[in-house]
Image (spheres, rainbow, N blue to C red):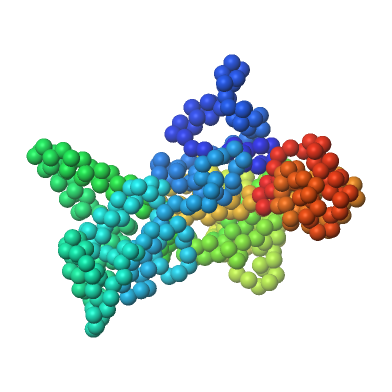
Length: 476
């Protein structure tokens, strides 16, 4: 839910969007029993953005990630810095260990997850040690010479039922099996557990059967997350996505470099555009670009798209740099036509150019071919969606930064005699206008260059200022 400035007020999830949203917009009799916080939020709601996902697991993870990123004023869950669990495997070590972490680092390790259900993951994690003979982070093996290692110095090896002294190569086979399981290859193990559960139930060993049932449920929940949320494609997956996309779009060459444009504005104001670039199926953030619309003001996505496409490729041409293998436009026929018009106006030969229309994820071609709808499971389509969503995120973030900056400036401009330098110092010290509204004279006096008179004036100004709504220096 967003206010009229595009500020995110609340992020939620629902199986039935209609039912969930309708609970907020009640008749006057029912509204009287709403929580005051909810009633206050509803008065500010101006617009909605909706993202459709494929499962409750994906919804939980996406909701948590977005709330942590944007920190909406009216959300209470997921607002701390606690992240979902990942499985970290330090494959560069002689004896890799499996451990649970909350942060992904560029350390050469393999990561699996994130996992939304920590209880299911921990239960599965312990069972993996018994199943595969892998080491968890609570173990320190010792070398016994000749590339052989003693994993445990107590009875755990006998309990887990695996050889305690192994070579590095033998242990690597265990690690490979554990990683394959986290990749979703678990059919044999699940079949064994299902058979054991059935046998226990037939023998009236109901507690034992319940244990198998709980373990199966935990494993299935864990594997669902592992398959869907690996946090980025591996090299074979990226190659497959590029190959299938080339085939689906009938491209002459592999789309190793893809550039995507998106337009963002609020009712025609703060109109900006984004350009993101993917190289070999991965974000190339050093090549991202942001554009302010210069040739007009108002609400015209087509003109805005024509302008930024022309600016981008005229510059590449003038600098002698190659065009990307594929240009993607976030939009339908009109936006694609505007992008093509830009190339024609500049006298440039366009690279393969398509649009991705959001409602049905329809691919629009610039060369007159009929629109194409690919299956949602299509690897090439999923790559296009990642590129498009990244362009959308980048454009919205830039739009929000400009709105935040403008709103900060407009409020502080109303304070008589407050110069540019002092505004910057105040914002750097407090971080947001909302924090200044709550500040005391003593708080303002702690700011370099603010004396007693100015501190009193600031307290008086914010006590009577009617702007309303938090405007952060980081995110409006």
